[in-house]
Amino acid sequence: MYKTVCSDNIDVWRLWEDLMDHFGTATEFFPAATADLTEVQSASVQKLVDIAEKNGFDMRKYLK
Image (cartoon, rainbow, N blue to C red):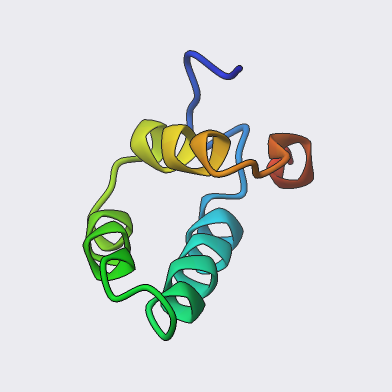
């Protein structure tokens, strides 16, 4: 678990795009995912990491 992150260690843009794709696709089948999508749109770096981990993303993929 990544308790403290900074944008120097994480490819934030790639993580953000992958989360947007993940929840954007989910909204087709689960309209409630729109709330998650909205949260991702304005999330801090730490919040993006938290959301990604909660949804099973492998954060090693996003390390620079």
